[in-house]
Length: 164
Image 1: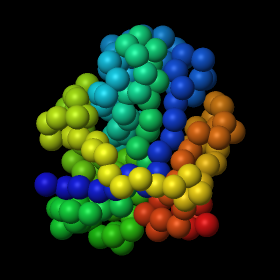
Image 2: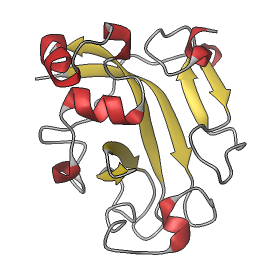
Image 3: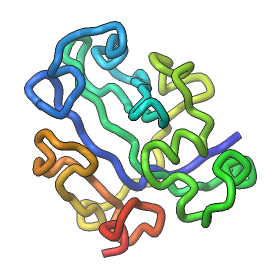
């Protein structure tokens, strides 16, 4: 079993967000992005890496939050085996690395995030002052939109922003 604390996410707002997969409409690939909320939307990028999102809005809207980085809390040895020889702070830094560390694949596309093996549970709150908001990264459309949220000071967040 692996467990961690989410320290970085990016929001994708739905059909009016040109960077969101739902902006191109419904497809078999994006069917789980369109709801219901509380489900995983898992897809492959560049034909290599899995990415996991939490679907957030009502069925048919197609919006989600991409998990970008997680601080490992349990199952670190298993994450190390899955990821190879990388420093612990990089085990689940970046969406593809996160999925590899946690063993998330396309098999989890559409699963409930409130029960089962892949769950997002409520944890200790983070004060607004401890969240750094930036433009999204790694995309070309609407990249400047301030929809990336990072726990300030986290060494597990991607890039240097997490350590500000």
